[in-house]
Figure 1: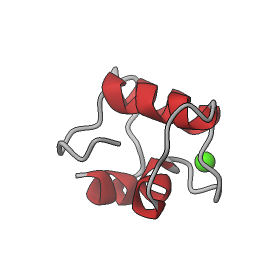
Figure 2: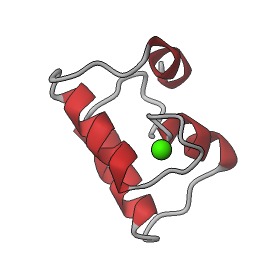
Figure 3: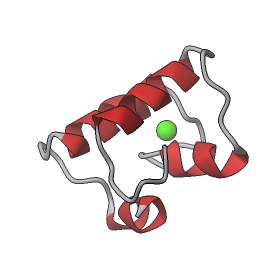
Length: 68
Ligand SMILES: [Ca+2]
């Protein structure tokens, strides 16, 4: 999550990098990136974010508020 006010493919890429341990996230970023609120931020969340970015499937209103 780059906190640019939009959920886009760049965010999904960042989350994927975090999941692969290529990127360090702050506690807030981890929380925001947990798109399915599972308590873990991983590739599944990256997929959800990517789908939201492609407007295939919206994220939950809660997530959008936090991310926006
Ligand atoms: Ca999750």
